[in-house]
Image 1 (cartoon, rainbow, N blue to C red):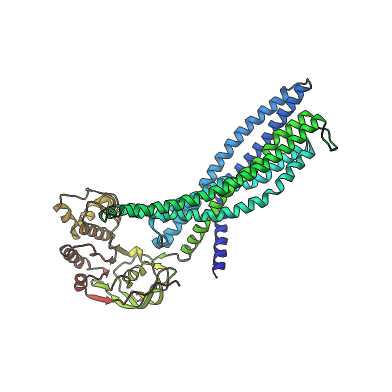
Image 2: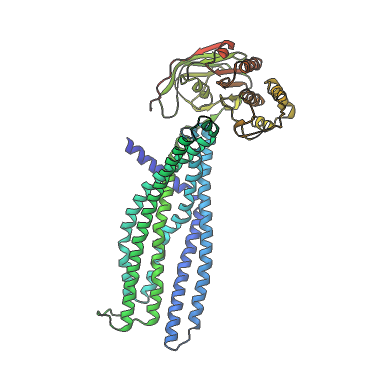
Length: 561
């Protein structure tokens, strides 16, 4: 089964690479055409220089041949510049296509798609892994074809001068495909390991940077620094492993290229001196010999480059093998946002069992009915499934048993009430900016009167005034400058601006002192009118203030499904 899953993921990644490559196809073809033109220009340079020297040696006119060589040099310069420009555009196009798919899938599947990894690791996957596709499109896609077309053009041009030199070049290159295949397979596994290490380091760094104050408070700087050093060392070792393979493959290619060019040079030299020990059936002139010697390095140039491009291919394939199944899994669980409800609904759970993606049920047998105007609380210890029940209304958890009814109508799998919900978590999301800009995240088009009314209803305005602040007061990262109670009230005011008929609160008083908690609950009671309000909490004060308390059992084991 594991082998079948791995094979399926590889198929998905291959299809994704072709799909993303469609965005770069035009530029890749243009780059290949210009690179091919550059090879042809090199043939003109070699032909012009070789025959110019031959003409001078025989007392003839070298000017026409030098003109051919100069023209070839000009064309080659322009062709290489154009090819590199188109290749860079191809890379940007493929990266843009991949990132567009990731972000589109996240928009359709919801934030649950980004779960399972730290924020730093997910950022690395979306930014760094997709970035690996730039070299795949810019280098590998045109380079693999040029490695066939370029040597063939040079081989034909060489054969017109001396057939035996062309055979020497051809024989020397026959053994290279096997070696390239061996190094490519080794590079692919090392590239996957290196990208996984980069994800780990990015996640570790982001998590510790976000909690730098807490780390200092607990005097754990040395320990956490050591953890980052270990992650960095792992990335260094795996990067060096890739470089060792790269140096080995390059050295072997250089060896074969040097030996082959040396054989051609020996043959040409001996033939021109008339001391070659075997009859070859051809007469070689100085012009022909020099032309072949100038052509020989260009015969190996695309093949040399292909060795390095295999590392670009390995990076691109490794990135696709992670990204494509991730996108496919998100699309398989695509969330459908239901139209906004016109009024607060009656929400009923009937023997519901819920599970997170890839896991068995996290909570079972949940039954309750939440009515508009009432405070309904889900109680239980951490891990008992309180948050899972709230997230089920947003299609962030999977229903495996029972029914969820909204005004007596079943909520279908994958259907989300997000358009009708305002959600307040236990750690409200506050961005760097002003209090006003954070409130507008809930309703960007809200008027000044609506802002002040929401801040007044939740008590946020009074708290700000008491501390000498206003709605335009600046806030630091993660809401630095606000107390826990002020952050909770800001989040509640932001939720009110949505004017949603359903209000979901996940441990809203977890970080509040008793006085702040009492004030927060007083605000909630006034806000319940005209709304269906669900609270996940184990706070005794919150439970005592609620009209309905639904106790949940012990945490279920989160075993793989």
